[in-house]
Length: 397
Image (cartoon, rainbow, N blue to C red):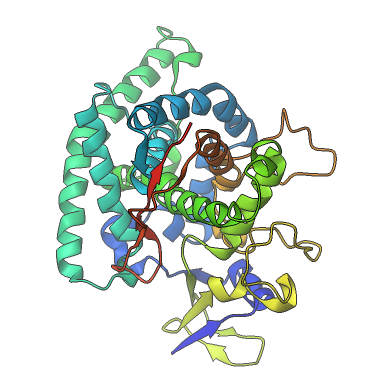
């Protein structure tokens, strides 16, 4: 039996329920089996506690200020010279650098060919996350993912692991300073192998998963956000966001509410479970949380819940992006990285942590990005997620 939850308050309660396990990625176990997002109970708690040591607010602030701004400029520059880009492809390239850094995937050559290979792998890994919602031949997709994992294991994971193990040994032997140890997920997992006891296959897949998770959702979030901003600019000046980055962040959060990276979440009971209406669910049943509907619940977000309104009033305790980042044990571990900190009345625009989506959108707008009138965007019809597969833009500055 399957039941769908559409109301915001009920959806949030389901996502926080500890007796319900993750079920959205069951079809994609070729990659997703035993990765963080699919774990439950103590195993999930211990893995997340290790990985969250990296994904702390101070890391996000450091990365935004010291690393991301430089990487962003370097990645966009070649497209500025051409005066155009496909926003989806550009987003992949911008976010690949970010996710490779914190996942622990080395790119020693830093060549266009190496970047292209990793991008292709990233796109293929994305098919594992959406396999349950795919429309094509799923056996063919699984084979494609398996081949991509073999290539990733051989050419990226194993060399990255080898380098980190050598540094860890040198530190233990007193030959290297602790500051030389990379700050990334793979390093933390290797340091904690005595407790985690992860088989190498799953250590590799966890690294691939973080490479995917950091980029895949943010890529589509950025494209949706830019589309909403382009629509807004038809009746509002661009300066309202370029001159006020805190307001731009509100626009981004509103787009995140309207366009959750996955339109649904899924859970299965780990024991007999009763819904609010008294109906009993068991281990074979599925609870589908309709995030798209929950995030447009008029009782929470008002009569204009279907529209993009960054100035909407929200009930206390409701974040501006709704349930797009989840709740409970499976709340997105990279929330602050993507969305930044929620602004307060006294937030300083100079020191505020905006999140990478807002920072990227601001830079694109400053460079005069606008939709290419001769090449409209194309929606990806291969899944039910309603993402853009292509979104050509022009640069005017």
